[in-house]
Length: 590
Image 1 (tube, helix red, strand yellow):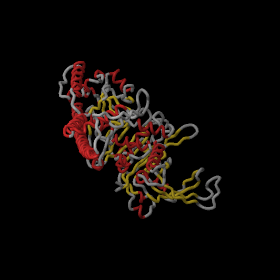
Image 2 (image 1 turned 180 degrees about the horizontal axis):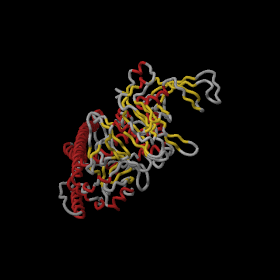
Image 3 (image 1 turned 180 degrees about the vertical axis):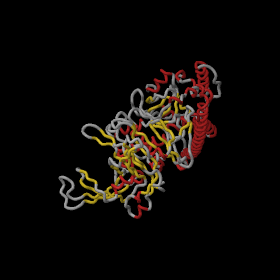
Image 4 (image 1 turned 45 degrees about the vertical axis):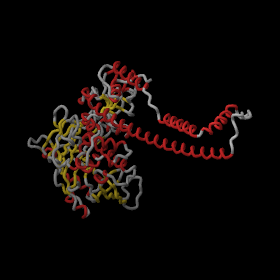
């Protein structure tokens, strides 16, 4: 008999409840009660169908012998011959007289008829037996389903550790690796302390943690299923759905389309309100260059809508694409427990993919990070085919004509000008040292310049002289849906890094590119842009910090974001900053 002492209290109660017995008492009492019930069942014998068939066949043979007594001698004789064996040929006794041919023929007919009837009975019995087995299997399956449903209902009610879940310590923004083995395989989160552990078997780290720390609620990070350890049963309870919504944020098409229709406010566990999509990003050390880029990319509506719907890229093999999609869903999730999000898991993936070129410990250039990120997302979505279309190219890619004068490139003799059509994601703008304006006190020089002045670099006639690339002219052929402008504010020499503090005066609404640059007629009709994001630098050139201004469409307000700090600002203040990157949205682009 099975050792019932190895079962836990929950399993013993389930087995007693299934048998209709009392479930109250300690474990020892439950074990004795279940053992007595199982022993009583073993003593009860129910005749099986085979024994009934055997008895029925024996009764039919006795009835046949009573009706035909003259057939008993040959049968007994055959039994005697079989008892003596094949090698013994003993003469029949006088009592065993030979049977006439007529009687032998009659015996053969009667025996054949009896065998036919006996075969029909066996076939009928087999059919009945199969029918009974099918009914028993159906009844067993129904009983098993009812038992499982009852167990699920009982788990919902009887799990004694649901009140130990501490939502305040849960943080799913970090890399999902075991805190002991550092393995990312089969990881569970302890819902009591928030730590990650691997596995839930008897020798796993999660199992050991449940015994040592007396923590029993664990959620599998890949599926969201919750288990009670060390008992090992699954906990099914609706009160845990809010944790699953934080772990795996999901957006329907209606949810996505309603994001810009009206302002959405949510409340965190600490009672503070936050705006989904306009939340602060945690900065562990030097991540402000990446945080500002991510905040501005959230203003690109088609890009945001694409990555909120994970079905559109669920089969993509690029880790950058998958991590970026997870971060976008976290930023716009209205069910977060906190009013901010940490991009650490995304940045760790970026650090591995770039061989630590962009990491959390060293300050980097936002323009270089944006250029790498757009190309990485584009190649990840197109399986490495650069010419193929993606959501990145549809939003950010434009085309220009680059003309290189003959003889202007050192070391490369050219007999004629070279004309090329080059796609671009970003346009670089050079800052001259003039014009200069003096303030009222005539003490401080404040350099200022208009945006359309530095945009003349792309009018097709202004020559840009570079010793490496030669004398070149640029002309815009196709404008993208989202125009990204990079103001080249920093320069590096052999001794130090310099910063050009020239203020660029730009328009926030209604920037008409066709007014300043010659464009094809088809492009001139769709050349009006509105500003949606502005990244600026504050502080000395060797350090300082990057901040951003973003526009929120749902309430038509501007916000200034510096890492975790989000505050409303005036649109007049946006144009007074030392802008570094401008993101414009074409009217009607979304």
